[in-house]
Length: 175
Image (cartoon, rainbow, N blue to C red; front, side):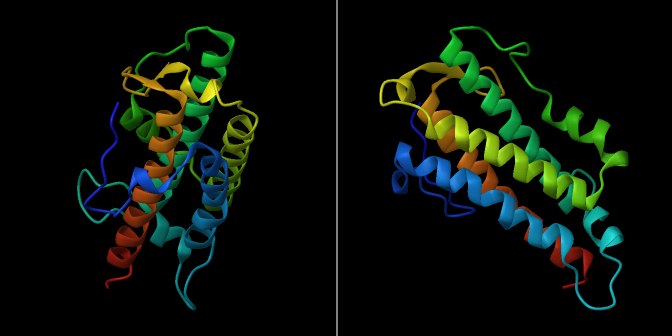
């Protein structure tokens, strides 16, 4: 599967090599923690991170939970590829996962869970040998890809949704 440059967020898959992917994945724990846990003076950050700027647009907290879910799912997909087994769920209902979890999401817990999911996924990727990067697996939508492509997609998702988090936080703050 050829991955193209994202015109919206600027992510370019050509900038990454498989051995750089674990470092990129691991960085998202820190990169999401700040916007989810550090507010501006005098604001109610719990309220701010829960605000959605429009119908059909997730809140910053929901985007963080979504990225956590992506990392957990993709980590499982890589582990299944290594074990030559099929994942329990071929297609993931990403919107349904967020909708179900949304009322119970807490800022610190999402930040901690995202950090843990990123670290676990990065560790799995860091242990791959050259041949394992080429193993077949599937995306969250059930499309066939290689492990390297799946990891690259995860970096794009993390990067793109971090941009989304910034947008919804600016909107929630009236900026």
